[in-house]
Length: 323
Image 1 (cartoon, rainbow, N blue to C red):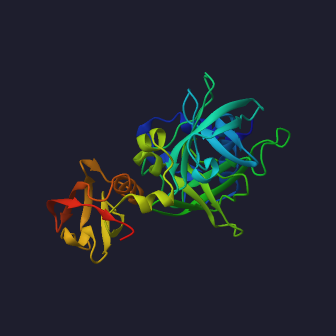
Image 2 (image 1 turned 60 degrees about the vertical axis):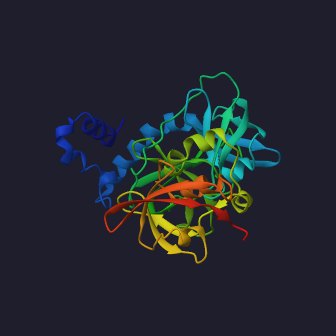
Image 3 (image 1 turned 60 degrees about the horizontal axis):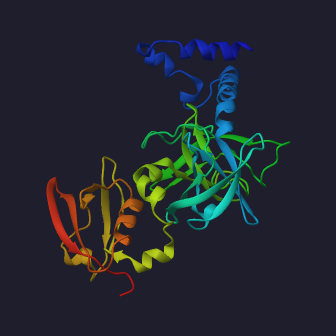
């Protein structure tokens, strides 16, 4: 093993009181300062890959192919909504060693392109951890794994290293190059945790889009236990009539109120900060959309929000999106 690897091991054994020294690790720097930094990054990646690769699967459904990552011993898999297509679909997954297992698609959302499937075999299955919400920042080092072009045991899983270059609401952008077949595969941080799922692919090398794990955390029970939310479903469900964005502290900042909608009639205003709906804390735009669209026109909701620092609450009757 080379000197860079032993240097990394030494730093990992340093007590937490030496936090400043830990921050000097090359993947915590704004840019690598020399060739040795790059060697250390390479060595660290090599230590992470074996465990991460074991949890990555190729997903085979009809004539299509995608990727995914196992995040529990009993075979729960995170992937992209456009890979599973719909809930209750029978499909197959292949592990890195070629092991094939049956699975079934669960739920997710076409808003963020998040999806879940469940391996139906008894397990235990190799799995990896997912990062907590809000743990990823612009500039963080990351690496993408997947099966572009479908499963190929001889070639193996493809690794692409990069950095997070943008993140807003339900989308993360990196320069970790994606290819067809990567969709649904995992994006890892340099702690070996899944931070996002591959979603949209572009020809430009810096236009690679992923679903942050924040979307999964915010809607976990819905994705796992309900049917896949499609864009068509949004038309059929309840309607509030506002636009918002995630607020820097917590909640959702209202950016626009649509005229003659339940939101306007309730007295909601631009710059109000939405905190909860029917007692459920609001962390993402997608979460608000799912909660509202899962109800019907005419249903009552209780919306809690801040206005100029004052806590307010309103009962609102949902409308119909098509009217």
